[in-house]
Length: 280
Image (cartoon, rainbow, N blue to C red; front, side, top):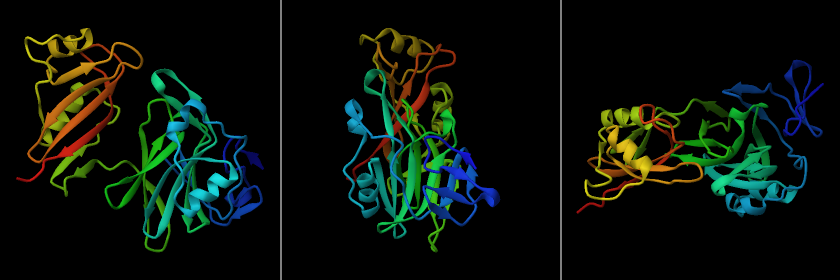
């Protein structure tokens, strides 16, 4: 028996039969991009009592039966998505406060519930890149699993089959908005200098962020001088957030980067948001 400390999956036995605090998963676990998926019917409590403290804003009050099961056991519930007749619930076993109000989540898992009955569990292998934080609906057909790092990034897209089976895959190459009229390519984690080229190919044009006569912070002035004139603002402290604006035929796009980086390499994309145009 090989223990996975701090994970729901406590051991792997011969023939890859997973046992979690006495709950047996009869099918072999599968591994995708550092995330392990296993069939499971009983959820154990977290390794230790969860105290969110200043990270409480990352938790939610569960609304689903599965979320209430996880919460009653002592897990901190961070997300819920209902899809294909199942409830997908993310929950974590700990928090570590960081700078600028950021937090890192530990012992993260995703449970797939049929009402209050656990059917599947997803957890991360013991590595920084596979730490699970929360889940969000991705378009109308998938659930996106996000990391629980200080700067969350998407890890994988989960789909639930008609028979209740679960599959994990790589991130979708694009995300659709505004009834499918606007698409944003997968730009997470890449420098804004590269992201703006990918956005241009998808029909997004940069919007002048700071006018010639407007005062600009030092970082924004550097990015503008490097030709990234759609920069709107950069914070001078903390994680070094910068915002950028783009426009398409059907929507407006706001992109946020993190880190300072040299203007030649530019900071990396942390997140984005889309505002659809209101029809006349």
